[in-house]
Amino acid sequence: MTAAVDQETGEVLTRPERPLAARNWRIGIAVLLIVGVMWSFSGLDAGLRDVVEAPREGWKIVKEMWPPAFKTVYHRGAVGKIFESLYVAWIGTMIGAILSFPLSFLAATNIAPTALRVPIRQVFNAIRSVPELIVAMVLITVLGLGPWAGALAIGLHSIGTLGKLSTEVIETSDEGPLEAISAAGGTWVSRMRWGMVPQVLPTVIGYWLFRFEINVRASAVLGLIGAGGIGGELVSQLNFRNFPEVGAVLLMVIAMVLVIDTISGFARRRIIAGSGRKIDDDETGRTVNLIGDLGGSGLTR
Image 1 (tube, rainbow, N blue to C red):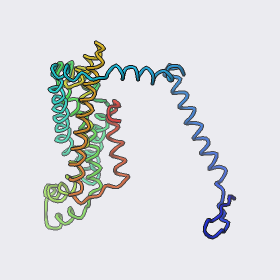
Image 2: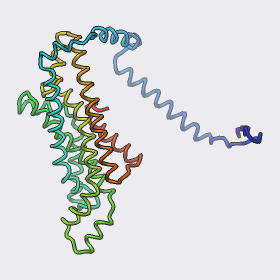
Image 3: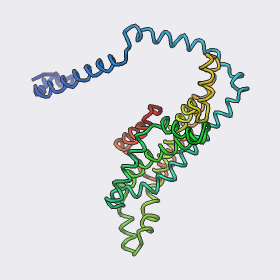
Image 4: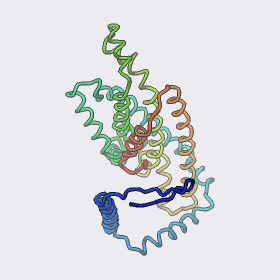
């Protein structure tokens, strides 16, 4: 037993100790985590010297980027490439939204039969398992270099993520409106059109905007492999070690992402608030995890 003194009454409070098995279980988990970290670090082929010197070497590069050469990258058309990244992200998001929304109805447990639901869910899982970067590399071999390959890669990957999220929204929807329409003699199409779509669409649109924020970042990275956007300018300057130009491009990308995130976040909050639907912490956590899976390429974390 452990004891503590109540500061107000002076009464000695006793608290039972945790069972020995529970404490051993926690210690065992902690040891496994430490061993796992050490084992993973050993596979990186990095020594203590590399870890210690990495911040110093990184700071040297940061100092070489200052002052940023905005004028040089402006004359090279960096502003136009920034907008190209936005075009790629927007078209990719629209492709994912338009195709994933009807498929999500066919994947929902409260809408579709098992024979139809299971295959579509597996398609969503398969699409999400392949990062946009790999999809873009495959499409470049077919379509050639350019933003169209990047837009299709983002669109295909967005189908899997948005389809999964939209399916969860549909499965947690209120069945009351659907039952009322059925009682009035409404068809399946009427139930979906007037009972389901109005209540799920605001939240689904919020997820579309959230995905657009992620796709803006992804579009900048896809430019590194020639799939359009500002990433092409960044890799070009890095190849020639023009660090002031690299700094200017990075600051432009950061500014673009901050502006898009601010506008999209405001619109998403207004849409969800206007729908009268509150999203609990569990649903928010699922959203972050699924979108982060997102980008299996590590772009969105």
